[in-house]
Image (cartoon, rainbow, N blue to C red):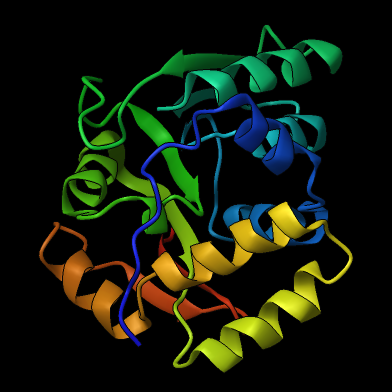
Length: 217
């Protein structure tokens, strides 16, 4: 099944609010658990922070970290700022507008670099993956997780029903489109090797998620 691209940024109020209202708790908790299993610590970079669900969860569980969250979508950052303020985490979570493909940040400046489900939004993710590799310190932690594209439309429909069956039609549509826009594990392995992440392990995490990861050393 061929990849069908999504818009690179979810930058309308409807998209931002719709995504924020979806329940990502279980998937996010799994991501955070893996992040700290890999040895995450210190100053973290969240590329594609969205409504800031992930940095909020991390900071509430781990009081010794601080996070810079970057997103391309202005409306998403507005929602993120509201969420961060509501949890009184403004001193530990900084939010900035930026493009994952060229962030303009100093090389080797983060102990931990992570990203959750933005790969499928990017037509060619090589510049993004190269940026992630450039920004993480030597011996630091990297975790990039995304959906992977199923082999058929029927399988997409099964996954949407299984994981978004209780959502509204708009949210179900978002999830289905994201699955269709995702890469396969084979495609991601090839792209990672071309982006300076040959050493990163590729793990198929669930029936819909895969990760590139580097452990602390």
